[in-house]
Image (tube, rainbow, N blue to C red; front, side, top):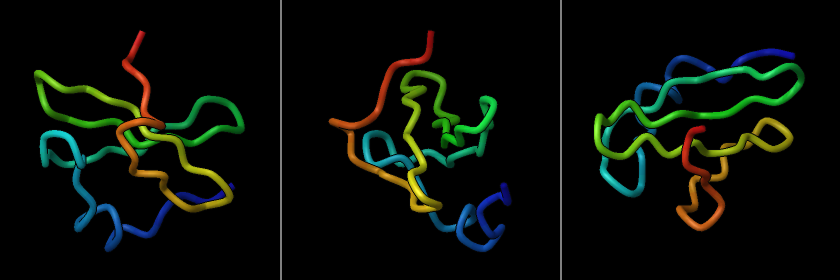
Length: 61
């Protein structure tokens, strides 16, 4: 499973707090984690497409 292109990660931001996103992998699943200190939402990547909807995000455990 390939990662998202670096140019995409450079322009994507968290829709909640506008902080940068970092790509993470959990087994077969990929996610984008907000790097903001107070936010920290985790967004799913489905079929190689980031789902940047706050309603679809989860709080980190």
